Image (cartoon, rainbow, N blue to C red; front, side, top):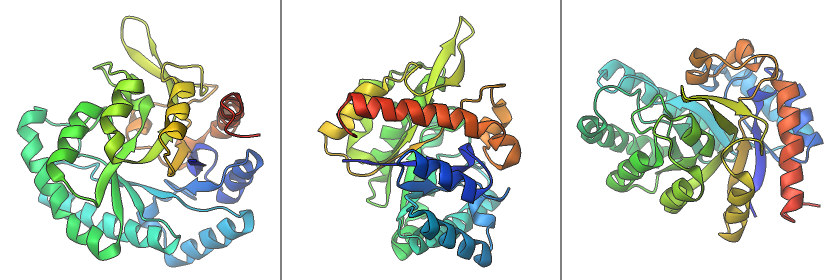
Length: 292
């Protein structure tokens, strides 16, 4: 049975507060993306000590470090070197907190995917030495702003990289955000299933003819989480699923913050919205008989 977590900055930059909310809804894990207005690679050792103490206080685990690894320019050598350093730092952080997973991407979208694919594969293979040395697994998220923006494209990347240290993060909400309109369940899920080591939970609806998409309460969008959670349970997925709310009650998150989520501006209004999503998620789990 899969375990459940939340990306903490979807609730608050105050980690203690975020963890308290998560435990109230029966979650076991806290995935870090930004804490105290700092990205994970920016956290100092004494701040990691504080995080460790808070995790112990609330009886929580850290399933994944939601780092921005390889959200950078594909053709920039300096960007690539900087992100290898981010990967190394976040891999060490994951290991400290008992996890192997570090979230990553396939570089900002630039030009034709087919033209970019060979270099994407080369860059990712170049990260394997860091991953082997640290024992980490880089879970790649397909994101509309990145080169592999769909599960079809990510499948091609993963097939060519062919590394046990580079796997998939399945985020079905991103299928709805993406303009290609791929069906997340069952199509996207079945396509990536051999590589899925982590799952993000956010629900999204497309708005009108413009194709603009917005996050909504889990279960009220177009993802089909009832079907997905049933499939994860039936398939024996024993990893983590983390709520990545993205829904806000007062106003939708800006495109700039969606592309680079972090900090107080991103977290504003997140607690109330996340509580709605956690309530709905628990209801879905009960409907499926996956929790009391």
